[in-house]
Image (spheres, helix red, strand yellow):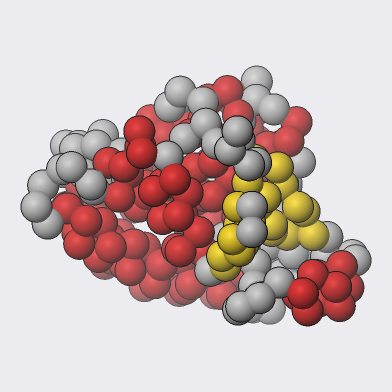
Amino acid sequence: MASKLVYGYWNTRGRGQQIRFLLEYVEASYEEKIYHFNNPDEWFQKDKKTLKPFPNLPYIIDGDFYLSEHDSVIKYIVKKHPKYQELIGVGKGPNDEFVIDQLISVINDLRQTIRDFYFNPKILEIRKDVLPNTHPKFNQLIEFKGKNTFLLPYLTIADFKLVEVLLYYKCLDEELFNTHLSVFEPYIQSFYSLPRISEYVKTDTYRSYSEFFPIQKTTVTGQEFLEKFNKQFV
């Protein structure tokens, strides 16, 4: 019998939510090791010192095998579940795997930019000036997507990432989102309507992650936005 995966991350959505969605989508057998920001020593003074090499969050443990770093963990999960190989482009077009990697790089850049806004003490004053700086890349993604339901004609790991980044943006300024990026609304809904995703978002486990980032450090809280967003799935 295959061992149950152990997935470790903080008690926020952060970089962890995409992986939680992926674990649910591929029907992985797993348990979560949740670290809390109000008790950081559990990670920094305990597990970080024993997990090697490259101790970091998120991580995955599969029996005796330990792996960290977000994108590596995602690919490992997909490759461990052969039924879902097309999520990384396997068996599709000859260059699809590279295209997906390219999309991930673009989305990671967007994520880092918008994520940093949450930690900017002046973001509520300047958000209408700085958020539009991300529109050129979002518009490139819109053009790339075309009439597809997802970025490619089929679901990929890039979609798991982009959906969360769009929620980061929408939480910061829903008015700007509705004005400039509303074309992504059906895209978000299509993702949340996927089998197993639609079941997972109704669970208390999913709803327990009520912040994008640690509220001890951010200027903007995501709790009110996420409560409103999640009500549609009740």
